[in-house]
Length: 74
Image (cartoon, rainbow, N blue to C red; front, side):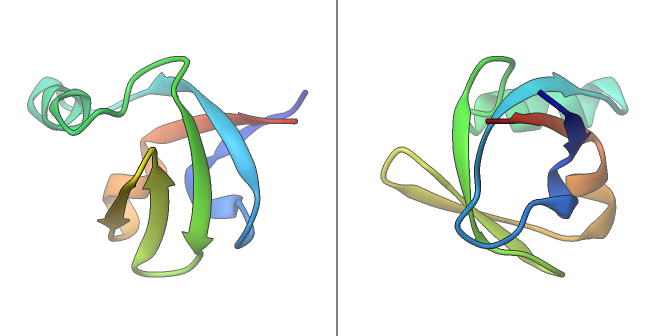
């Protein structure tokens, strides 16, 4: 199963977070939003901003934020 940056997912694709890289404060903020290793997400809208679905929530990211999240596709 390939590991890719979140921003490369297409709309409708599902994936599992495998790694979050970046400054500790950014990683901590993303963890507080529910994004951590092993969490399953769905890409709602790719591009900038990209929008992902996490459970019943939608989370929006701009370029550099999305680049630090790596996912594993099915």
